[in-house]
Structure formats: structure tokens, C-alpha cells
Length: 167
Image 1 (cartoon, rainbow, N blue to C red):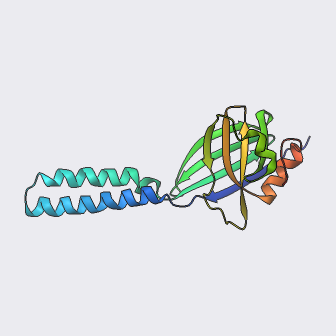
Image 2: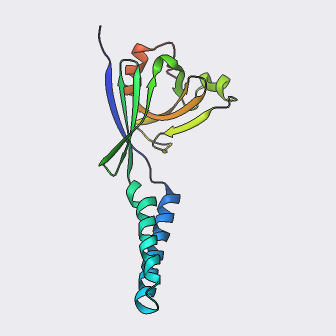
Image 3: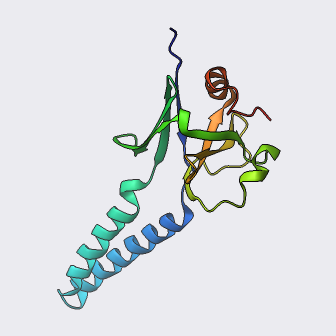
């Protein structure tokens, strides 16, 4: 029995909302620090609070990567923050997968009106040359957005050809 194994590491684009919020928090922390030194020491508490908030909101999650690991009909998705902290997000048993196809594939037309929970583990980029955005409907209740390479898809397609649509 042969075991299929493949890994893929992708980088998610920066979330502009979090970046802007983090910048606002840093500016507020600096202004509170200056106000605390010049006007009243009570403003120093604001500087500490805004500094902690900017760390939690932005700096801790500044660079996000996803690692897909496929091994023997199981897809693991891990989220990696700042190339140092890894968090296992989900383990998908692909026997429960209903379909996996490119984002704009006609194979997904019959699934579009379903009320499902959506999970986005893709790069967020639409014009990536190496990766394409795929949609997976899983266990009747979840919809996953994944950015996969053609080589990664080929490995999954070899073990589950009836559920993975090429076009």
C-alpha cells in the first residue's frame, strides 16, 4: 500500500483592516506617551494600553502563513504566525469531502445555494501564477477556500478522482 504525502506552504496577503488598526494603535500609544510626559502622568496608562492592544491586534499576527499537509486521505491545515508560532487549525478526513474544484468551476453550481459555514485558508490573491483558489465542500456543513498548486492537486486527485474536479 502506497501512502501519498505532500506539503504546501502559502503566505496570506496582509489584512489591510488589521494593518490600519495596528497603525492607529501605535500612533495613539505614541501620542499618549508624549501627553503623559508633557501634560499628566495619567496619560502613560493610555500609552501602555494602546501599546498592548497594538501588539495583540497587529504585531503578533503580522505575517500569516498556512501549511497544508496531505497524507493518505487526510488534509491538515496549520496557521503559522510570524514564522515562529504554529497553530493547528483543522484536520479534514477527505472521505467526508463532497467536492473539490476551482473557484469558478461549473461543478460547484449545484452547491452555491447551500447554507454552510465558510472558512478561508487561501492567500486572498486572485491573480497568483503558481496557486489557484479551490473550494471544498465538506461534510454538508462547511465550505473551505484553499490556495493549492497544481502538483498538490494532482496528488489529491490520484487518490480521490471522483471527488476532485480538474476544471
